Length: 150
Image (spheres, rainbow, N blue to C red):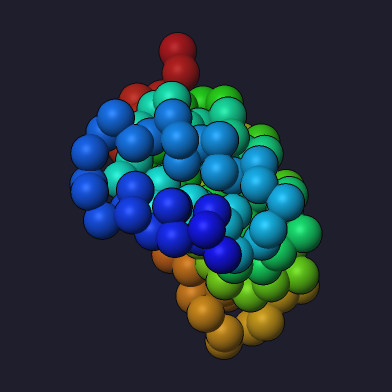
C-alpha cells in the first residue's frame, strides 16, 4: 500500500522529475502500482518512458496494458509500431482500441494490413472496431496524399 501511495503522490506533483520513478514503478510486482504508473505516464508523456511502456503492453494486468497503449498514442517514434501492431491481438478490447488509435496517429503504412486483419476478426461494431476503422481511414488518406512513385 505504501508503494501505491508513493506512485499516487508522484502523479499529484506533476513534475517531470518524477518520470524516472514512474518508469521504475512499471516494474513493481503489485499490479495496482504498475497500473497507477502506467496511467500517470499516459497522462504525462515523456520519451524516456517509451521502452518501459512498450514492455508494459505485455503486462499480465489489463489496466496496465490499456494505459500503456493509451500513453503510446502521442508517441512519434517508429519503434512503437510493431508492439502496437501486436497489441491489436490483445484479449482486452480497450488495449486493442488504444493500439489502433495510436497506429492511426502514427500513420505508418506497416500498420495497414494488420489493422485490416484486426477489423475482420474483432468485435465488429464495438469500440475497438471503431478505433480500427478510424485508423484505417487516416492511413488511407495519407496513402492517397502521397505523390505517385516515378
